[in-house]
Amino acid sequence: MKRLLIPILMLISLSLHAQKSNFWQKVNNTLTVVKNIDTTYIYHPKQSFTLGVFTTLQQAGFHLNVNFKIYSDEYPINGETQYTIQEKLSSKLGLELGYGKLALGYGFEVGPKSAYKKKAFAFGLIGKSWGVHFNYFKINNPFQSSLIMWDEQDDDYMCDIIIPKEHATLNSLAIEGYYIFNNKKFFYPATYKACLVQRRTAGSWIVAGRYMQGGIYNSPTAAFDSYNLLDCFSTLQVSLGGGYSGNIVCWHKDPKNSKDKGLRNITINITAMPVLTVVNYLKTYLYQFDDNEYLSGLKISKIFCYPIPNFIANSALGITLDRFFISAQFTYNYFFYHSSSAFNAKKLQIPDYVDDISFHGSFHDWNMKILFTYKF
Image: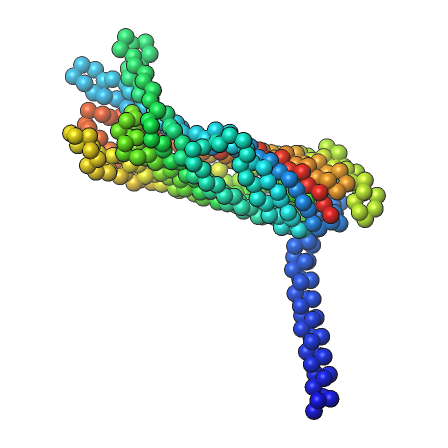
């Protein structure tokens, strides 16, 4: 019986070892092997591990203009309130470690603080044919409010600017995804990652989707001290669209051996994606105060607005020298809104003598990243 158990245990051990080897081999192939590519257009470097150092510059902000008219006994008076909050230039320094298609990085803010308080988190998956990016940030900073009455040519023209002592909060959550059609000859992340190199100029049509929710909020005290006709504002948007992305290869030289020695490449990527915001849900808040200047209530208007066009664009430069990869990336998100019916005046209980209310504004977020990578 003992003689029989020994070969059985050996077979079980060999079987488990083979299964374990097969499992890690499958994981390794999933991370490092890129299938269905045209090798005359795309080169696959031999090294799988990457170590990078990066620095980023970023800035986000929100601007709102509310136009209205006050109807007096004599004639209507034009009025406008402006509301602006923005972080200072944010700079980060970080490390990025990659294996095959996977890359993980961590950065920390350096230099002067970009906001009084800030939380930020970003995560992205960039593949050959599809990708998704998650971005969240929240800043707490002073905001500027202004009131403009009458027209500039009028004798009674007034422009008063105030910065309340209490800060406002701006937050944003965005999830973006895309799909590349010509993924055999065109590698979209060639200027962002070191895992593949674009050999020849190529491009592709691209479809994209974006989910965004965020808003700007201030306290009742700050609202009372400022000139805001609308005190808080939040939005939920779903955008669909597409465009074109191209990799322009300025210089390419194939390697001389299996260690990628002699590999030379300079590639520029330009991507433009107009999108249509098909779901445009807006929520507007207005604080109510009594005669003693105490908060007495909160009025909320909820409404779905008509679709509106917006724009997403990015560009990048990638330079490959042997095992070294240098990338400069620029991303710009601009969301504009304009509406004369984006809130319910009755629900907000705006006085009857204030009418013809419309507002327009924009949310912008731009990011520049410089990455130095070594492949090994």
